[in-house]
Structures are given as structure tokens and as C-alpha cells.
Length: 95
Image 1 (cartoon, rainbow, N blue to C red):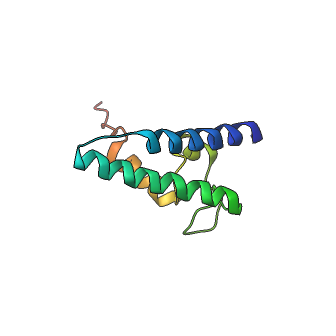
Image 2: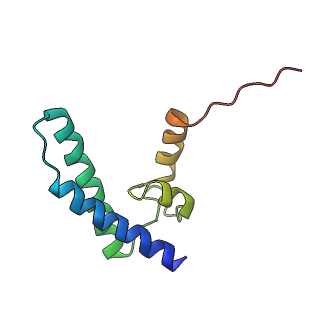
Image 3: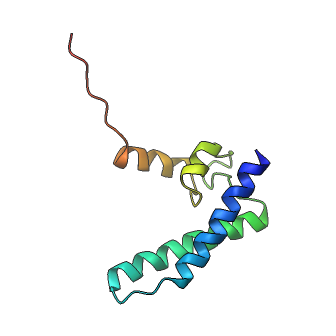
């Protein structure tokens, strides 16, 4: 698990560098890049404080599967929201 956590940390650091290096004249794209930079910087700050991977609402540990998918996740509710918006919907099976 520690190796996996270190890998996530390295990915966050690399994402931060990549976002810093990205240049665009598109205002909308630039806005989203700035938002992502803030999210990544916040996740790295939490890492340094020892609070990375802890739900900001409940104080519980966020399952690593969620962190692996979205390293900037702040709450378990955020995961539920993402699943509801982008997850596969289940279709009822007809007899």
C-alpha cells in the first residue's frame, strides 16, 4: 500500500508540473487548468500535513480505490456525486 501511495504522490507532483507548464490562449481551458492546479496543490498540501486520504466531512479514511481514481478527492460524497454523474446506469432486467 505504501508503494501505491507513493505512486499517487508522484502522479500529483507530475500533474502539478504539467499544469504549470501548459500554456493556452483559450480562456475557458485556462480557467479549468487553474482550477485543477488549485486542486492538485491542495492535495499536495494535505499530503504534507498528513491529512491526505481523509474525508473532510466525516474524518474517515477514503478508500484507496477512490484515491487512485481521483487523487484530488476531498470527501466520500464527492465520489458518490461523480458516480451519479458519470457512472454507468443500471438497466432493469426484464423477465
